Image 1 (spheres, rainbow, N blue to C red):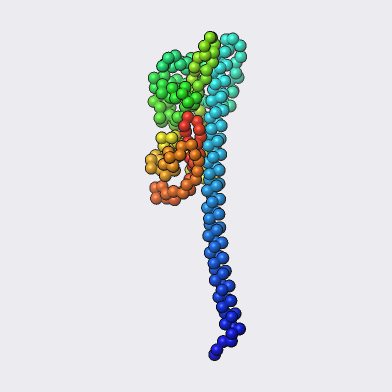
Image 2 (spheres, helix red, strand yellow):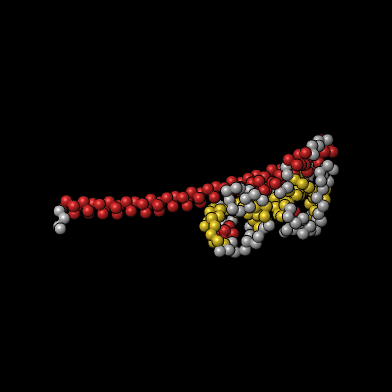
Length: 261
């Protein structure tokens, strides 16, 4: 039975319509996947940048508070001004110590007696204190510096104050409470968060709800990207330990340290 020209035209039009619908479905799926991927990249990048900013803000706030304690003590004999002891807890500082730089050495100086004293040997932390005098800040965990407690975090900051004719250089050192860093890096929407330095050493590792034992990150693709562009932020899809991840990173900017997720 021969089909009429009308049915042939309808058949051709139907085939074209089906082909157009199939092409549209494939194209829409491709565009949706691309947009969804781009959205995930943007969200992760935004979270990393915000986390880095919060870590930086927390560290700088703690450093400002530490300098305030040191200045108040150094000038207390002239002004009689004393800070209330609860101010230390508000800055998330557990213990503190003050050092005066004399030539190439650091000499312990006094802080208010109601501030818990951080007992350290200046020879063990000389390079750490020197970093603070050169870069304004130094930050490390206890696993890196002899004389520091394992698992703790330390922040040192420089201040110059004149009690005589010439200004003197001091470094105030504080042992930080873990909550200071845990809250900015903890996120229920991310698998893990890391705080690493520019050498790729993992200082702090946080899961969704708790602090984890830091794992070695040698050969991590995101760390390689950080080393190539230490002052930049970004997002990267990568494979690590036979698993696929989407990671974002951003610089904290305190003593050349980075925050990565």
